[in-house]
Length: 165
Image (cartoon, rainbow, N blue to C red):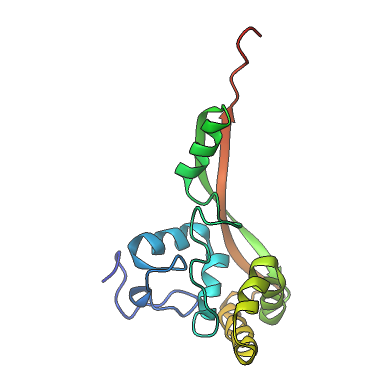
């Protein structure tokens, strides 16, 4: 059992909860929590793992779209910029990613991070990666759309007035 999940349990992407490695797409207990906190759209690319080198994709603090994924890093950056009273609140919301699984897979893989991952894969693996992601997204098809829960931070902070103002 891992964090309350049976060893054979699989999330909606088909990745075994207990078989995740140490990468940010679901590795170890902290990685599982990070991936769950980021939402289903972040978990779906785990289907790419057999076909694409994921390395540190999604690691908090690394360059890219997840550079501010760690709330402590957000507080650190804002504090260094002179802000105070920073609060970081997790938020989730449903998002539509495409008309069907193929459309959603194309959208995700044609985005900057998706292109980056595919460019690192062997040419013969790219079609298999696209097919795997498409299949991982099929459970999310609903009424002519692929809807995945997204997650982010609602961040508030106060910039104190400059001295003498």
